[in-house]
Length: 288
Image (cartoon, rainbow, N blue to C red; front, side, top):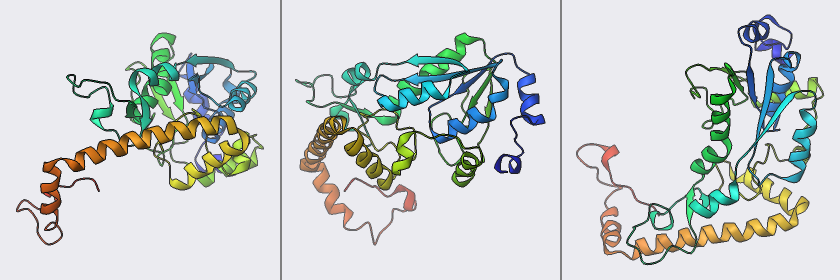
């Protein structure tokens, strides 16, 4: 069994000892494959466990229903954040952000940009992670379990510290993608609808306009799923993505028109054959 290979079992001594040290335990839940595995591993400790999910207000309808169903029998807490309000104030999440299109723009600029953008990492941190950290701070829980894995990067990583009085347990930190799927198959764990369509993940906000670290293949699979299952939302998202793209492109064109950029263009002709005396790290780079 996969869990045994990693020294974990739902009724094994390691989890028993872990839960024995704590009276209040919080598990972060998204409805994706990783958090479903964590939920299944912790199923014998429902008397101490609180399952927490953050609803950003932009969740796919089928995911809301799936999460409600998956957490039946558990102490379940639905936290809420306001994605629409956050975007209205700070702009659409983007992988590339121009200062001119953000809240950090020149305060003396005559008009606000037609389309504001923000780093997608800031958006996720505020809407998905901050509510959990706030809940931990006031819940009295002393153990926090999350389903992030070493290969994920970012988010609620193994080094995050919600609070000095809270122990963090990375339940499946060393598991591979293959391990996760094998455990799901072994235990016949139900997955959300999108997995049957080749979309691996909990989907999160339908209106996210950033790649958010996903590969092109994952983004294409997500959009294809939306186009088929949620055509109305897909059309709305297309318009938002176009706004972000056009705003970023316009800012880049404006930068290229600047005389300083023209000087850099000329200087760049020598980059391939010359290096600064300090070494390659100090060679000036600029966007193409």
